[in-house]
Length: 379
Image 1 (cartoon, rainbow, N blue to C red):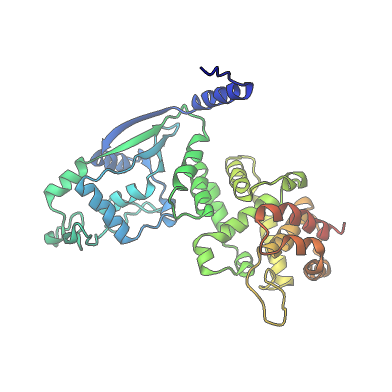
Image 2: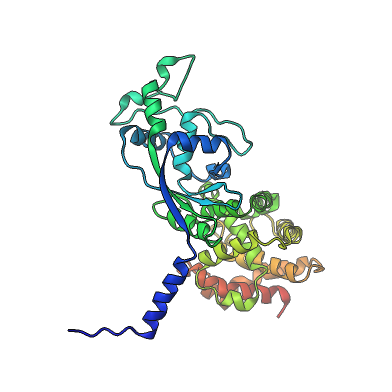
């Protein structure tokens, strides 16, 4: 017989698990689709219409999901979080519920206007679903039979409810964990969704900032990167890293996780000075666009033409200049300094060492940002 004695660390871990588990209060019960539709119509469940630009199921994916409900195939649980006002925020299941509401003709966009009804595509199991809609009074043959509409509304979905007594960060953590499993969302699209959940006004402010012409002109990233909202990731990194103390930047272990945590903090910070940050952002990219032109973040001419956008150059030039303007709002524009920095850093050993293709962002940023600040401050 083996005598098992728990170590101090093991007991501490058990205590930690027990303590954190007490911060999450949940409930669960099945609910019919008809009941969920009523909640949506009454504004008692929020699927965040802004999410529709990030969740992109194809018509076939949507049709297969409707098919699954009609055939009685089990649907994964939906997760919702109860807000202080009693409304349920959808944490996991936005695309599934959006598809149901779009099919039944009640889905609304960001301007509170009803979107067109979903027209189904025939599937392998149910090819006769092709061109069917929920209900079409002008063309009854295109409507789903009434018996199937009733069965659809009576079908039950399993809901997991995170109660309002839970720690306020629980739903954001859960959203990130659940939607990162098998999701096609990019890291920034995930952050955007969390941003909407935390503070819609902040999200709208941030979206407007990202559209600034000088910023979009100078980054000149690919269409695919734009689709994945890499422009928003760059803007968010700029906002965060231009304001961070050097000691914190040097201790960054994972830039993705760091960016997400900082985003959550500033989006919920009522004292965050949006006007000042927006001024620094616009001023920085206006200066770079005017002094260096639209190719300022591209690989310098090596005799084979210019290359594409380089994140390491962005970190040196944009975040470096932005940091100086953030720290010194009265900084007087020095075009000669900007031009000199844009040429000199290419041959510096620090840049050469940490800007290679094999260097990760988490090892590059703690070195390049302090390096960029020293170039612009003349230290």
